[in-house]
Length: 437
Image 1 (cartoon, one colour):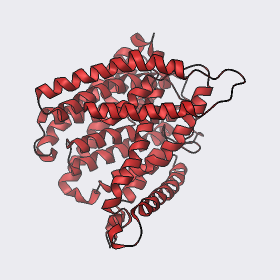
Image 2 (cartoon, one colour; image 1 turned 135 degrees about the vertical axis):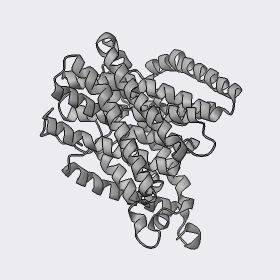
Image 3 (cartoon, helix red, strand yellow; image 1 turned 60 degrees about the vertical axis):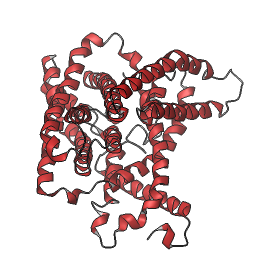
């Protein structure tokens, strides 16, 4: 059934689709909480359920019936707004200033925790290139992109798991937060390079994109950042708060996203960069006034992103060869992260239990991985089958964290993995924006 074949307007179909997404997501989150899983795992699973992997197995092509093709551009626009807010909040969380003074103690571990999974991922990508790379994608950019995707850690999910299990002030939690922060900054920089290479259309275009990116970064650091510090000062005592600052921030996020999209390095980088230059005052009212409503808005829109991702995932289409490749992807993802995290942590003096917990935390990927995969799919760097494999890898590696931490006996076993009403950085109304401890 399509909008054209019924008397129901397209906008009404879109609203009904959003309602379906929210209800199914809420049911899956409730089930996931019983299984001690963060909501991001439940909502990824909900997206897979509403796509061809599960719902598509029933007669009648239900995914196309419920989410008709002509409704998907509107759903995609809603999802992109939620994604931009998520990336902004992720950038705001990534308080790089708190890494100062810890570079020596964290440096070697952080380098290995990023470099080893990158190298293992590059090896896996080289093996997968001939069978899975789309036509016209060069081996160099394919390997560089996939190696980045393998090496990422979902900082927002990691922060929530660490907080929920009471690990924030432990050596394991502190090291994991610092290494994830440093590693993700490097990974996003490499991804900017990959996107610039993929979309530049030649050497001249590539250097133009890099020059514009450098100019954009300079404007953000030397103009936008000081301006935000001035404009977002707390209101004077006795002066009522208004919604002007919230409007300013949301407009800034969207305009920054537009700027990076115009440059050619994707809109998500603009939202993330705007979060990085946001002021981080000790006064908590700014966080309470801005972070909480943005988190709630993002939590309502991001489930649409999961469903649109799920509509592009078809597990049944993998076949025997595809499942062997999936096994390679899962093995490379887990082995790379654990080898890069557990061994240096153990050499630094951690017990095997704490080193194992550190590796488990660094192995979480969550929504951040889906964002990177979405970029690769949009640019044509990965095909449908590899996209399916990588989404399943993100789901499995994130779902592993809770059970493994309980098995290791690390942290507060009574704390739910998902906590209250959310688990990912944009899936709960957190009391504050979490920085690196």
